[in-house]
Length: 394
Image 1 (tube, helix red, strand yellow):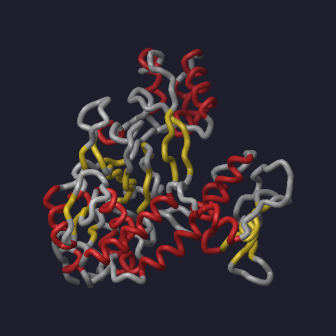
Image 2: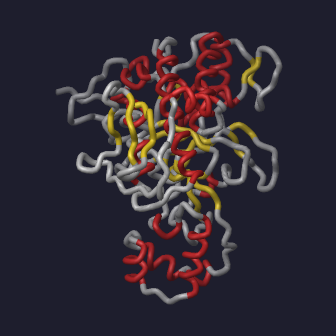
């Protein structure tokens, strides 16, 4: 067995493509300001789907005397968190109880209070560049322990550490597109390494601008982000470099020419809007797939999503689509199997979103949101095939 630098693996690795891969630019070098997501140590206490429930829970804590053990048992908290918030109780009482939205899991936004007396690790240096700012953050893993690389997503909100995977060592890293040097100012600068940007500009023969312009012959930070986002979703890229993507930040090939660059920018931009659930194509896709929720009832989620209590039931004629059951009477119709099984990071969002709401009752906003998740995942599957038609890998 041979051991190669710099990792000296004990198990044999497929080193094919390593030389060309190491010529690509590394994402944590392109984005100088990088941070892991927020670590709470107490999701059941400081994160909730409902803003009112979150604020009431904090008020209950402040208005009552709970021992560390009582807090731990009541909310299923991490080992040191109950003592920590009890010790900080006087300071917590001074905090403005104002909730903010947090990207908790793919397509699953919730509420938290952004304060370091309540959040174990609030990652202020980077998260302060996102919260209440006009900004985007690319989410990737520095390393992962899932079966394959699917660890790339986008957010315009603060995010949680295990957003992309619950497995140890697979934390979601936040790469904000812009930085705001002065608090309260609307002036921003790209969080991009000038040398790598210059090399990209030279490769495609375009002039870089800090903000998007209509001027011909220019490109901007959002274009670089969309280009990267397309590459990271290429099935060929993911398969070719799967061994390297397990152990460090992704490396992305320099664009070969302006035509290829703009093709990938266009597809990456579509993906970004679809994943942020901002694309008008979602409504069109829901209609095209004939997605529906035809049976009235109490909208309670009781299915366990296991063999004895199935979530997805294939259609008898066309097994590529099926029903997704909430309970024994209510279901979503014409759900593509590919959307049901689709992975983002270590999660299958169409399944996880429902599993996380078991024994709860969905409202009409939840039902609409779930239809958008299915539409987004099915559109993603279509777009990644289009990306793969472009020669992403040399």
